[in-house]
Image (cartoon, rainbow, N blue to C red; front, side):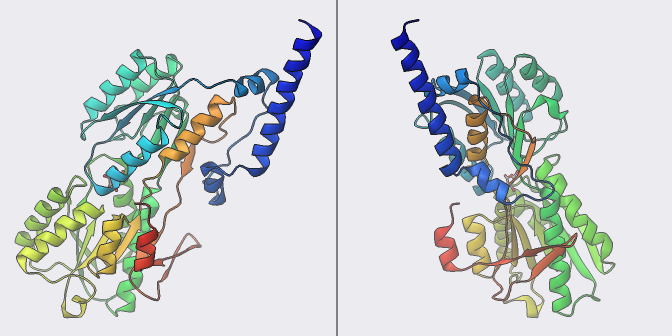
Length: 381
Ligand code: AHR
């Protein structure tokens, strides 16, 4: 190597190092955002030093990163927002060659898609799993093929060595927030001794979102002797499913005080069934024995229903996990190490109450947020 060539290489490396220093000082990433919410269960993202070769490689033009992303389906407004976020995060402009599969809520299609991604030698596989079960064999295959798997939104029952990271929601905590809210609300209304007839419209049976929300809320059913849980049927996270289940409930039960819908679309379906049956619900109807409606997701349409007084309280499930996954991939590509496996996304609890309550769980306060027109205008989904 000539003296001149050595000089050029040193200059390139110095420039690379300087750029890295600059970006370390100035760049703010989605993962830094996530770290702001660090609690005992939210990990920090580890930084490993880059070798000179990695720094030099970082300066070369990038190849497109091939990502296979298998989505649950298109069952809800939430899901549409999550897919849009995924397509943006893994866009061509961002340096990705995205292979997207909509599994239409069929677990078999998801596993087949992952097998195809392995065969096609994707650089990364991103999965939003429909069910918690059925993943070990195919994830082992991806592991042995050395293709990192990133999970979004829902969790799976599988050894964590088979995936690189998960970005999603604490579904149990969401269910607990709903229970805590209802307990406090009924107390405030002087109804804490009255028998409260509750029905739930559950999400897809066996999805971690359904399992977690059910478990979280169940703790409050156990704690409140006056709560009578009449039924828990599956509405599959869809509007038509929510409507059909609500229609059955209205035919079966003479009195229903509270309907817990495990997502906004089921709540819209429940509203349609209540409207058709001429049963009053919502904040204004409550003093006349109207039904109290609780929902999860906090999509724009869900929060509009909160503002209209149709839904009493809506517990957010954040669909914007793909940018976190893209950032994780960027860091893995740069040779950095992810020191944590599981990352919880920031989420809020919404009400139309102008004096929103503070929910206290495990000595951790959660201030609810009042829905306003301005809040809706600024909302991303
Ligand atoms: O897994 C997240 C859940 O799935 C959301 O609550 C729901 O809307 C979606 O379909």
